[in-house]
Length: 412
Image 1 (spheres, rainbow, N blue to C red):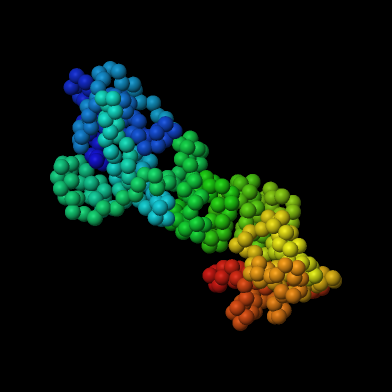
Image 2: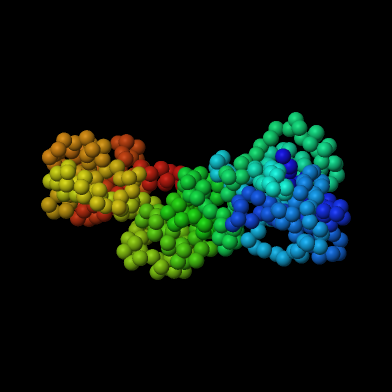
């Protein structure tokens, strides 16, 4: 096992034993091999830096590298944005530990040596985010590699396997060129991803939002506090922001847009599909600290005389979010709110039963202008999971769920 700090600065000799230069940088080509050191940058005084390929290396040890070719075969260095530089892009940089669901700083890189067809390849196996790596960085160039290894021997290690690492790249275009996929980020729970984003700089937060899919971005955005939400969206292209906000629940989208500057809010709404934009505009009419400001306009309502089978079949045909669908509201022949049926009772109902037979005995609803504190008290007093919001004609216009209540409590 080698460490990047033991290779960087190493003296390099060609096949004839001539000194070529010292290692200035190690490059990975993610598009070819995600963990192989593909190029070694060699510098010597005022001479133009040279580059050795991975298949031109015959021996590697702490402080020393030997090549299997003559120095004259090596090509001069030409910058390549598709290369990932160990010193520049990794050491001291923040990375996402997708396994541990947190942001950490890289102190060193662990390299495994692998002899293939007479050449010695170096492959990144893990990143060192613990004390041993910090000690190596501190003593680099002051103490010999052997002495450093003896010092760090009894120190507690803290490493992350390379496959669990996701780079935080502020430039989305570079991320594409490197083909660093965001699949691991998209598998994180939105709350975990939001926690990670809160520890990052604004540019890094934008990079993550730009690299994951719109649904993941929307879910993570909804978990951030209002200040960070607004900061992020203000810096996004209106079209990109609209694509993300379109995936949010209407009430969450309205809350977010209300915190933006009028110009940004207008630009984002202009990029959204007409129906979704109109839904959000209607919610923006309500004051934040009211039932209307808490409610979501995506809810299920059916006629009270409908059968269980009819309702279940109809709900299956809808694009519903199961996590936010725990109640069905009932309306009578005048379209007035007449009751609520929990999804649990619906699932356990007998064949042929009417919805009116399943409704809760407690008939509660609020007008859109009711103070949100009164809403919170109703949820607490009656242990509610959802509450209907009605208009002046007693027609349901929205639903407040326990998630909405928890979010409001968290903000207060």
